Image (cartoon, rainbow, N blue to C red; front, side):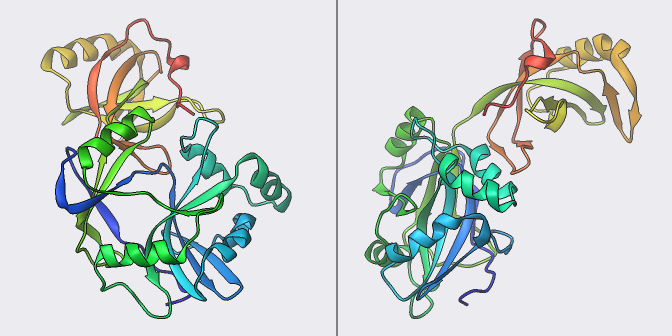
Amino acid sequence: MLFSAIKPMGVSFGEEPFDDQHFIYEPKWDGVRILIHKQGGRIEAYSRSGRAVTHKFPELQDAISAIKTHSAILDCEGIVLRRNGAPAFDDFMYRDRISQLGKINRAVHTHPVTFVAFDLLYTDREHLNEPLVERKKRLAAVVDSTPVLMPTLFVEAQGKALFETMKERSMEGIVAKRKSSMYVPDTRSSEWLKIKHVKSIDVEILGYRMDPFELVIGLNFRTVKHKPVGVVAEGITAADRAWFVAIAAPLVMGKEGNTQKMEPRLCCRIDYLDRTDMHQLKMTTFRGFLLDKKPEDCVWHY
């Protein structure tokens, strides 16, 4: 099990925060899943897909002494904290993207990574079939909190209060986990639920599809302009659709598959609950057209 790729246990979507004495609740960190393997003086890191990424994070060497057992496998979230104390997803993705040694060494100081550990899969034996609360006790006993590695905080029973606290701190939301849950790699568990705050963003409209009707939406990034970031259909009324099709006709540049491609001249506001590592927005809801918004002002929030 040590130093071999393990696909971590996944979470399902929860709709609303809730209180339940049979659950613990953790902050939803805005980072990337990383599994850390340690044996003696050797430490390695693997991505969710099993990619070896140790070389990208030299600060991992400082985590060896923080793990107080000879061998361990930790399930973590890799994050980069900004000065306001909130994690920044794009900052971590920068660390994951760079490969030149000089840039990596500089980034250790400009974009320092913290690995937030929330589960313990192995020490001198596997712990996958132990209840979560037992794994949490073991995790607390074997990991010291340092700038590079720290166990995540969690509360019991009080999910609603933690959800509101995370909202106040501009965090993504919470993860609710049943205390008795076992760890099953490469599965999406209904006993682990991520519950996120709804986020709003202004997007440009890059095209549309008629059957079913949906808008193709885009954003401007520092290095990429007019990047498609998803579609939105929910919340669009028949009146919205009729108005849009009439006003969009002169802007159509051609057809690609079942998509009418458009000049980026129109904007709208959407809500979304999730996004992928490549900034694709998921679980979107249309909120309204923005007639006075300039498309170039529809940018990703860094």
